[in-house]
Image 1 (cartoon, rainbow, N blue to C red):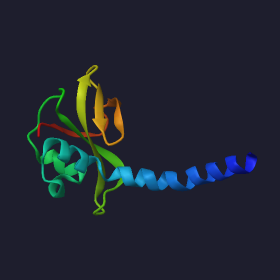
Image 2 (image 1 turned 60 degrees about the horizontal axis):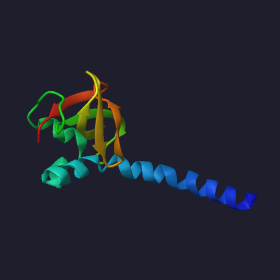
Image 3 (image 1 turned 90 degrees about the vertical axis):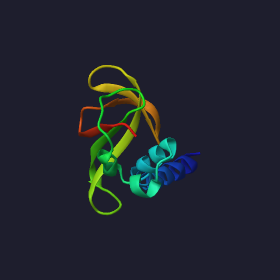
Image 4 (image 1 turned 180 degrees about the vertical axis):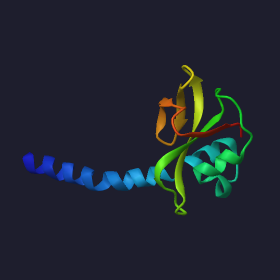
Length: 114
């Protein structure tokens, strides 16, 4: 039983970074599919900042800077769609990882309306 547990722990440790890297690059494409936008233009999160800016409301997309690099080597970013506002800086959002509460003020580049 110990050997199986160690094997599973090693497998999780080896695959987690790959899964995390995979999720870093699909947020733009996920939202583009939802809004029926060209995934080639909106696959990089920071490209979303060029859309019309708006206030935080359900259906708007939050564009945030994120540590690390994007696929093309530029600065990293993340986009998520607002489902529900909680207060001025917190909202329930949805993205490729699911639905959860997020600080929409931290690192925000823009809030846009696709």
